[in-house]
Amino acid sequence: MAVINTYTLKNKNNFELEVSTIGATILGLKVPNKYGDFINVVVGLNSALDYISEDYLENKLYLGATVGRYAGRISKKELIIASKKYIIHHENNIHLHGGENGFDKKTWVVESIEEGATTSQITLSYLSKHLEEGYPGNLKIFVTYTLTDKNSLKITYRATTDKTTIVNLTNHSYFNLNGEGSILNHELLINSDFYLEVDENLVPSGKLNSVEKTRFDYKLKKRIKNINFKGLDDTFVLNKSKLKAEITSEKSGVKMKVYTNQPAIVAYTPKKFKNLPFKENVKYADYPAICFETQHFPDAPSNKHFPSTELNPSETYLNETTFEFSIVKE
Ligand code: FUC
Image 1 (cartoon, protein in one colour):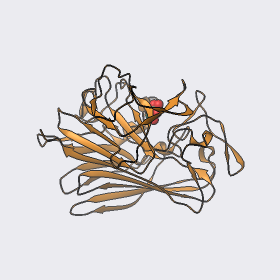
Image 2 (tube, rainbow, N blue to C red):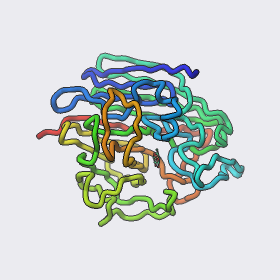
Image 3 (cartoon, rainbow, N blue to C red):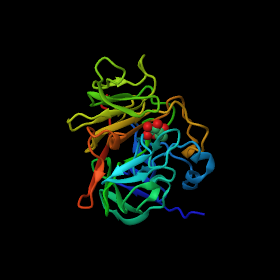
Image 4 (spheres, rainbow, N blue to C red):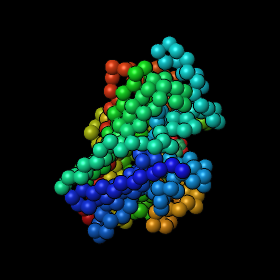
């Protein structure tokens, strides 16, 4: 059986982050609500072992996991990278989240843990060998989770390769700022003028559509449950503004701001969760959570006009995302 280690970090205000070595997964993130009670704002399971159970894995939820080597969808089975052909795993006509055994299922190595008086951080690494899941190049990845003294969780990915490859990493945490129930009464803002048009397999057509007068317009903060809400599994092209997204819950008073150097957010709101052993046995309702998958565009290898996801041996991939927490002033 796989050896799984978990680590709990705190900042000076007792924000608490729990991470597992399988998938460098975020198991829990506790922040205070407006009453000063600490609540877990990411969906997690009771124990780290639950994440390797068949019951959980068949749901393909990627709860809190590191997704790679390529997060999101790739339409082609054959990739041409640096003039060479590589075959990648396809299921239901797409390649999703790095293939059959993506980074979410790998055992990561803990490189360092620093617990300071005000901040703390943990760095984990994984070596993805040449041709793992079909991708070229030995890719070495480091992820650092930092709980800052500004009450944010910063996620930094760095990666290097010895052959030209493609990389698109993200964290797949499902946020619910009440720690239970639904996110339908949360208010959402996404600083995005365009979303990606997709086909029935959620593969981008290559066209960027304006959010203007569509259900994708979250430029002004609005309650998620609006008359047009049909659930989200969509790529929002991020504007140049510093703040990329924000979500608040009136009920708990928790506000979360999202900052990133990535060009897009895939916002994903599953309709329901199956009956799983959720942490502290919390109960979720319809539309239980929202993922802010900060990343490059899906299927960039087939769309030369999308920002490139290629990584050359002379370069370092850098993906920085910050989730910053505060209490809404009433
Ligand atoms: C998101 C979605 C997918 C999938 C997965 C669990 O990235 O784009 O559709 O369901 O998460």
